[in-house]
Image (cartoon, rainbow, N blue to C red; front, side, top):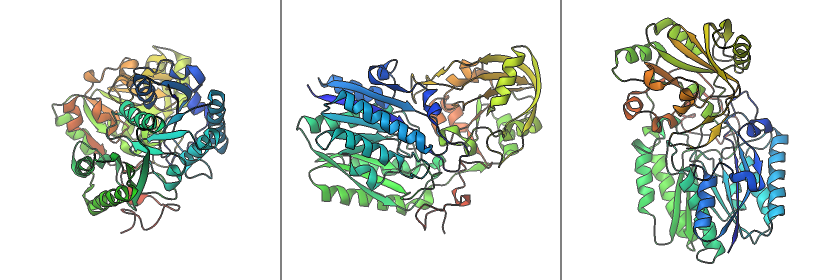
Length: 488
């Protein structure tokens, strides 16, 4: 029976976000070490659960080490990265000896002064385990995979879906490669090809378009010694060295064939770079379209201020727009505003408030909104996600409150609310099925959880923000240049 360590340190960085990531941002969602790591995680759609269950199913011992997950935001502080690496090293040494290690990372994590923070975590793990331990890494489809990340691991695989619904199965794939290497059934190696291009997240869906064709081409190469192929269109709001579209191929033995396949697929991605287009609508036009539609709820995607893309989630732009153009439409909107949520807790349910909300963290794109209304709900308990992405995972919004202002229900939160899952609204007494309009702060992830008709009819708003789909408007200073579509 082999002993396989299971660890997860995950955060997605948006270098245009004004909000630094600290250890509290991990702790609020349940930072854990040792045997308690798997408490409440068995059976969830997470890499942790998938890896641990796959190891156990094959007759080996999963050894829980670390669980650390934070919502997307700006760069980690140096102290936070150091503390997370130290925690991982401590747990690896306490659990020694380990035959293998499955390390679940996001792949687009950066810290102050450290562009490739995920590589730093892998390096720390390798230093703690020694060269004899097999290390397998699994990452998000939006990872910025680099040679440095591959330097100290034996294999690396990524999600195959977007919207993401295969977190657990990705963890299981990574675990299978580790177990096979530990037991001598295979000795995988992963190679990487990259191209200097970015793709708007709204155009990265694998359900249609260019990414679906690329995934089909990748699948056609599978078998005959090709153990895994992963595509990484990368999180585009990441100004770091080595940024670009990545393809990894994991092979048994024939490294040169793996390189040839990776390069061919990377060429295919480059050749269709102009096909990744995004349709955007001005807020007034989008609200008019919602009013004319029979689809309910009608989803308006404010992807430019998406917390799952690292933006602050505090823009009140759609409060202004719905107040101006949305009369008679029952609408749900979220806004991160710590002071506003606190004020609602002071006045209590049924109390009236009149205060400016929004733009409390990121002041660059919109003015605060004067919110006047009645407090309908307050709380501070975490949301349990029930949709197909991150199923069963608990996410903290901090203190929260629902304020009704005319036809608008405004969910004020201390920490970002994940509107990718209707469970967030249901948790605070707002059933999306009862709404005419729901503003989702997400580029694509939301499509998997809302009714198919709503997802199909949804529109993306043409508004500014730290996670804008207009990538050519971002000023990159660290990424390789030229870079499509930033440079003509």
